[in-house]
Length: 314
Image (cartoon, rainbow, N blue to C red; front, side, top):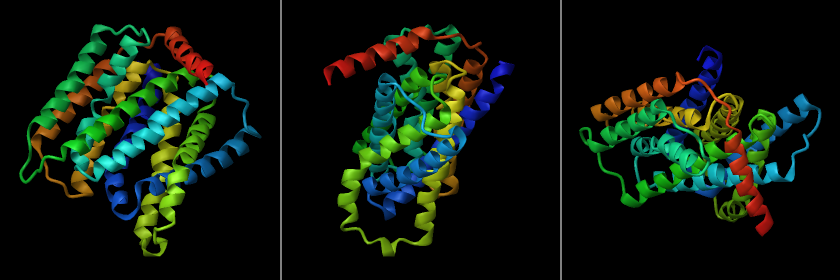
């Protein structure tokens, strides 16, 4: 476990930032149209990452067509669909509930890895996944004083965001180690910007940019620089060192961060069930993290096989 402590800290930092994005997104949707906000985020992130990449690597690295396809699929699921479901879902439900629902990501990743990627799950990992699910049920099963249940449609949209995040996490294993973390973050951010750009241009035609306060632009800056650049670089540097399921369990930190920030920043109602559920998530992370890392070539082969099928159908 000692040799992976650095990776665990990086995964923790990445997921705390992701949790802060959930609370921040609740505020951003008040002042910006969804597609425009997302396009601004990825434009800023892509620009910064491109400059860093060209400066550190001395040019843009060569990426194979198959790897490029996987990066596009990763951006489609983890950037485009995740952001759409999250931002529209947050218009209808609370940040705390969104954070709680996003806690199902580790279980989704574990099931994807087990059912489709042939990853062997030890009893510790199954127990860790179970603890995450128990934590989510505890947090979602009770309500604090004054808490209002979110709109059903809003909660379903957040479930869609959780599935997108899980697919992003699993797909990231296929290119981790082959492509530098900075290049991975740059390419996926560029894809994210291009995916959001057409509708963002349409929304910008009727949007009054002059009414946006300085705080609103600060939120976009944080979303692009810390919430995207920082989180991606931490994640991509760490994911190559651990298994898909182990990385997936660390995503359980995101809902804990989101719930805490929803109380502190947004003033949403406190619930003791959230605390108990959060402890379950933390115990699950400790349980999974103590399992030694084993190479997973079959995982990458399965993802590449799926990418090859998509490529042949184009």
